[in-house]
Amino acid sequence: MASARELGEVAARRMSAWEQKYPIVGQVRGLGLLLGVSFKIGEGEQDCYCARSVRDEMLKSGVWAICDREPQVRLYPALNMEKSVLLEGLEVMEAAIDTVSRKGTTVGDYPALPSGNVGF
Image (cartoon, rainbow, N blue to C red; front, side, top):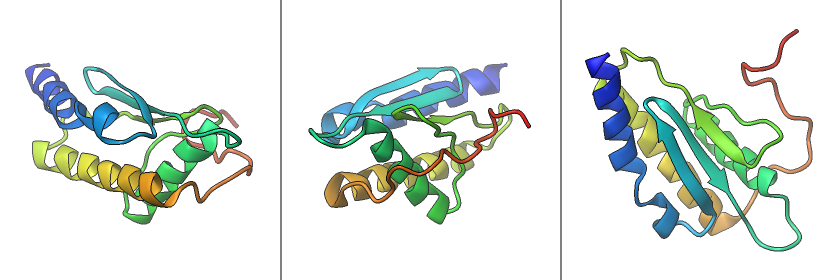
């Protein structure tokens, strides 16, 4: 439990400036290691396209995240994850946010891919 609590605090510190730093970030949330980032973009575009684009950039770099029909990307890291691995994943997420913030959305209106929360 202590390790999970510490990792949650590490993640909160690492993500704390994203709302001010990136105009597409609406809100950064965390409850322990249940982490989420909500996105917002300009007129005429769907906020969920922004979230999907961030997730797509993360996947290209080998980091899996949850994103479906909502304008958010969620992460549920393992409770026993090494701190360095968590920080590496958050670095990839920030790089993805930066890319989408600068270049715009790259993923649009496709069916949301199963992300671990869809039953079959």
